[in-house]
Image 1 (cartoon, helix red, strand yellow):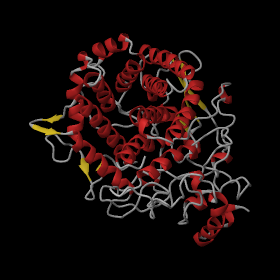
Image 2 (cartoon, helix red, strand yellow):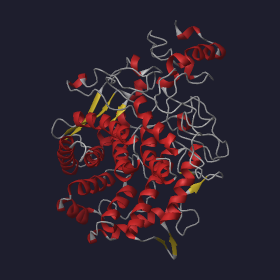
Image 3 (tube, helix red, strand yellow):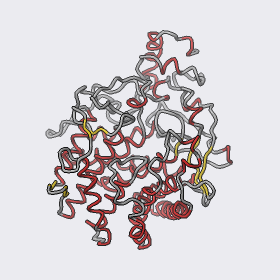
Length: 511
């Protein structure tokens, strides 16, 4: 059956509806897709445990490579099995970042760091989901080990983004060029290298008890990769601009990643070398800069909060200044606080920018909860000018954001696919929007998929747990597949949310 034959939106809708159950049948041994409000703890408005399960399951839908026999997102099949062959290196595996079929190393590494941080801080609360979270991390770290297997070289991208974006095809059908891009001594990339080091170091902490030998491999590689990042300085987008920009251009420079990477290595190794590095280089690397956006590009806020833990909880006195830096970030997001500089929508959603705003909602919520944990441990508070804010206040702000995401908003819509009765049905995601291989074994050519992409039909495959870019600054969400700014999911939106959902599921007695 050739998709181009379907010219009318009605026919496309009938076509996709026919394949819905073939793709989504009984694929999910987790809780039922729509069963999100049963067995709730009497104090909780939301089933955070169900949302947690789904937020981790999402990563299976983003997998590249040879899928395992226990793959739960069963409408996905093997893809990218020759990745790396262009440069005679094995780069099979890892994650597609969002709704396309490219493997971007920069956001993949940040996703890995944040998934690992979620487990480090809140994994003890995850119970049965802890193992699934670790599997999600390992799918990434196995790939990052491949990408860093050659000294002073990191393979940072597989696929030509410009050519990929001119197609609308399933990852299983990919026939665009799988070009491989790398950073090395001659084309440095301190940002992507230091983020990769952070990811490997954070994951090394995650696996320290459950798989000590794997943890040692990760930490050894993290040390090597960070040394490369520090020695050969430069942004990766300076040398790879036509290939990584505007997709994941390093707008904030590489200084934030060097500070962030050093903070993670200090935490993972307890080696004074990294503490001294932070003491000597912290100010040069922007420790005190007034920036209040934490995401795949800018890591300053995360580094400040991570280093404040060492001061507050581990009593590392030399890092005392980071408490002030961390407080400044927190003050910037507290509504009504002195120095608050964060915009909120009329419905109460933190709003940073139109493109994939939900990533800042989840990352900020995670930092609020994590910092609240550190403050509670140290029996202290946040100081904003003459005002004082307790850990409880930080948690309530984070809860408001997570609840908005799950459905407490003017549209009464959950922005997580498969959670609640109303959620986005037309997400900007190739694999989710096209018939699955089981129902449509014939190849869907590069341009054939656009007939469906431009239609009003719901996606036939549920990318369960996917959190989309979210509403605009007026709480509006059109649920249009072509609207990638609002309707595209991404791994780095979900990664920090995993930790936040684990915290709330435990806090409300669901775990």
